[in-house]
Length: 144
Length: 405
Image 1 (tube, rainbow over the protein chains, first blue to last red):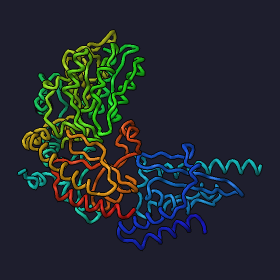
Image 2: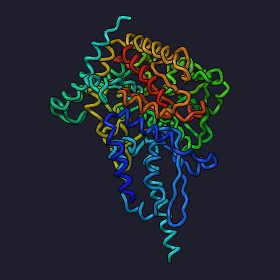
Image 3: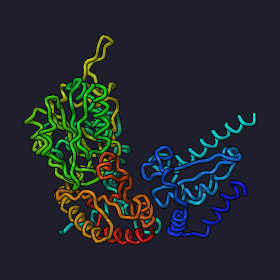
């Protein structure tokens, strides 16, 4: 599936929840199911500090694709991280650079993307793009 | 107590709405309060009837605006019992008041190697301006610590004061813990040692009777928006002898007496510190907020909020794994807490879905968070328009939310 197909799939999944409570219950479920990061990866090097919660984001680049792993100390944010990883992990840098991430807005969780005092989600998306740009350069050099 | 809270609530249009299909419970009053229709009307009236630029025009509208603007200065003077209106400087908020005081006090009185004592429970706004000034002047910031109940260790103050101490900066009421600090006692210690005292009154002004002469403090700052008034208005009170020796904070219109390229002379107090066109309508409507508080009676307000605090504290203490930060007897209507096994952000996000507005995070008090070894808290803070029924709804929702994690 392409990045956009997965985003549409997520929007579809959330569309069945009319009530905010159900929407967040699902997010909490996703958060609880997210595989925990190895404690050795939960260092300041990988920390994205928000005013509300902490997010750790680790990336690996192999075979032309970026794998992301992440976690947060807040479960709801962990749920958002899980969704985000589903969309962007195991993708080529070009795929990440070329596609807009529209699903967070579409599933009605836009409040988590406020640019200030937020929970680090916006910072995390920014970080994902920075990794993609950096890895893109590396692979371009390798192909030269 | 017999307090007609329903009647008060009638005056606050914003409170009567549904959030996510549930009645709004607004418990984020320490961040900002809501406004009564009297304040909203005053804002409206200013713009529709007598708006003009104050102090320097010879026409009717400007005169009327000036009169109303200066009327608020008198109300603010009376509200904190300052001696004269010249001691009341309008700013855009407590943060600007502190920046002004730190800058100008620093320029006048602080030398390299001098020290400023700042308490551990301060809001960043009462830390950073002093740090900026200290960096500029080569001075040092010394921390006055707290204990685990959220009490300032006043007994350490005499030890911390040295010959180089110039000022103590302290909050009247902590925005996180709710602790009411013994400002009068701290001021006495400061005075006995020839040290000045700056008090951040942002969290006190809406809830306590303020008497700057009785407390004998050198500076006192507060914000209109935390006391049912408009945004973008604050006050800095200062003792005349100090304000007179302090240079202006910003240059511009209003604050000058005469400008020549060879040099400028400054206007008299308080205008020396009010550069540029101020928030005219905001200041005028602030007068309506002060009237509203006075008419309700600050003692009545304090008693009602104390009742809400006790009621909420007792209910929250019944919840297993819930810890309240700030357990001093002398406490304002603020409850910060965490629940074992649940992140404050998760709790706050879900409470919102129950229509309940609380604050989560570090509340701009990182040193305090470090003291307790936490990343943040949930904070519920009350105003006189809150009710016991709202606390019931909040506690009930909180229990449901906790069960989700």
